[in-house]
Length: 357
Ligand code: PMP
Image (tube, rainbow, N blue to C red):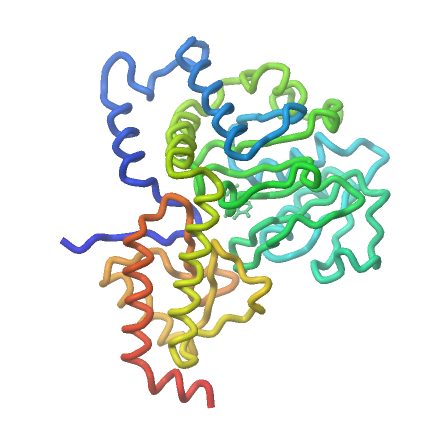
């Protein structure tokens, strides 16, 4: 049987070895992970090991809290200003694309927010020294753009790392807060990891629900309410899988190779696949491109699915095709996709050339 692969941007696949461990742990009966009480010593141990592994992988300094919060990264769009801004201060948000704008719109409901065009960052046009924090979307999942370096700014950086979490090291001198939904890089939906410099947490704005106060959750070891036990279990297995494969340096090397293979296959296609962004801004995790017209885009998706390559349709606001190379994706998926990109381009060589002329 032909293997099937998902290149979905919304959720990443689990490696087979991890998926088997998860399936085993879900077996019915006493001790199933699905019934593990968050109050039990077994869960406390699981959570402590999860945090310890995350701290080792990302070299998180001791003066940072690690929080395991329920819900998606979008929840943090609200919690960040609620926890970091008081009535006086303001935050700067870098507008780099779809997800940055979603973060900006939500943050504006809770604080004074200045939006900065990505191209203007560091030019001096928008002084940041008065900002309480500066928000950055490290990988724009809809647009296929990525910050390849953590910029040195006068304000502490707060980064949404949802779609490139654990694919590269983090510079904690520059990044003061990082948050990431876990469904793309380390498991299943329902959990967002928040890593925050302790000195920044002084208690949330009045009116913030208690369970959404970072400081209160840090003091309660993220157990002020029932934490998402199952996604924490899956993250535990994924983090140890990443560690056993060589940690972040190995993930970063492997991603660079995979990205280079995809880029080479796109470049070799005689103009059929068009990428809009300059190479320096292109994401290593999320590759977006367009075909010359909607009919060809439809044909591409149909042929890809017939070849076992699924969830390649671009974000609804952007269109085209999107390839996501999350940590759990099997090497065979990249082989199969590169081969398919070449074969589809050969079959449509005339279209590509015509489109270039
Ligand atoms: N930030 C980024 C960069 C994302 O890619 C996404 C989801 N695709 C989100 C935030 C929102 O995540 P959630 O749907 O889990 O709230």
